[in-house]
Image 1 (cartoon, rainbow, N blue to C red):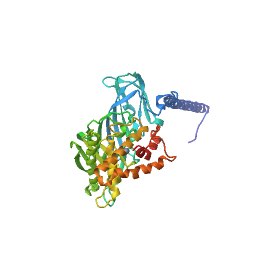
Image 2 (cartoon, helix red, strand yellow; image 1 turned 90 degrees about the vertical axis):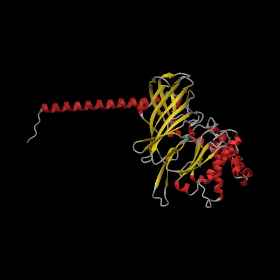
Image 3 (cartoon, rainbow, N blue to C red; image 1 turned 60 degrees about the vertical axis):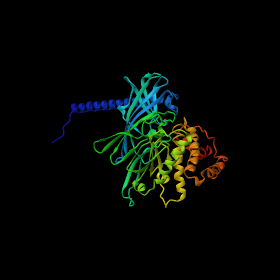
Length: 454
Ligand SMILES: [Zn+2]
C-alpha cells in the first residue's frame, strides 16, 4: 500500500498541531497557577511580618491548656504509632491563632477541629506547620473570647524510631543466644520531646490534667503515670487500657511504657497506701536484679514523706529498667524510667559502687516527685532549682537507708570538691541561664546545675 498525502491533509495536520500546542500551553498555565497559589499560601503563612506569633520561640500566653484526652496506639511490628488528641483550652486574651508544638508527626488533614467546650464548632480558616519553632498554627475565622473554654482536636501519626527521644522503640534479647529480639515502646519527653509523641503545649508552665488511653498488642503490658481505670479487649489481639486522670502536670512528666516485662512489688508510704513495682526484663527479675532498687524505693519513700510532711500524692509508683535510654533516669510522675545499668543490681556479683549508684538514682528520682513534679520551675532556665534540690534530698535519702555509707560526710569529697574547680574555671556560668531552644536546655543540664545548687 502506498502512502497518500495532499494539501488539505497537510492543513488538517497543521491545525491539529496548533490545537495540541494550545492545550499544552493551557495545561502548563493551569499547573503554574496551582503551584503559585500553593507557594503563595505557604509564604502567606510565613510572611505576616517578622512579628507573627509563630516567629517567636515561646508559645503565646493567650491560651492555657487545661485538659488533654490522648489516645496512642503503638504498633511494635511495623514501628509506627497513631493517635488522637483533644485539648481543652482556656482563653486568657482574645486571639484568632492557636499555637502548639508538633515535631516529626503527620497530622491527618481533615481531622483538625476547633469548637466551644459546650457548643458549636468554629470554622478554621487555615492551619499550617512552622517547623523552625516546631509549631502547629491553627487560624480561627472568628476570634476566641476571653474567659471561654474551647476544644481543639486532631488525629496524627508518627514513627517509633530508635532515637531515644519522644515516643521511641527499644529492644533486648530475651535469651542468652541473642536470637530472640524483643521490642518495647517507651517515652522520654524531657525536656522538649513530648511534641514528638503528640501535639501539645510543650512548656513546663503549661500544666494540665491528662486522660490517657493506650492501645497495645495483647502480648505486652502498658504502663502510664496513673493506674488503669478500665481495660477492654478489641479484635485482632489489641487491648485498650484507659488510665485514671493525672494530677495537673507539665507535658515533660507524662510517660508510657509498653513492654513484655515482669516486676516485683511492695507497699510503701507512711500510711502504707502506695503500691510500688520495679519492672525489668523477665530474666533480670527472676535473677533478683530488681530487689535492691525495690527495697531502696520502699524505704526512701517513707523517709521523704516523713521529712517533707507532704504525702506522695499518687496511689502507685512504677520504676522501669529499660535497655536503651538517652539519660540515666527520668522522674516521670508515677512512672520513673531508668537505664537498666543504673537500676539492676546482681546480688553477690555486682561491685559495691553499683549498689551506691542504684541507691543514689532511686533517691534522686523519688526526690523529684516533690522537687520538680509537685512544684515545677516555670521554664528550663530554672532547671537548677529542681536538680539542686533533688541532689540534696538524695544525699539525705541515701543516708537514711544506708547509714553506714556516711553519705552526708562523703558529700564534701564527692560533690563539693568536684564542683569547686569547675566553678572557678572559665567553664562556670550563672545557675540561672537564658534558655530558648533545645540546644540551650542541654547546656543547663550540667554538673553545676546539680552540684553547685546542692
Ligand atoms: Zn534530676
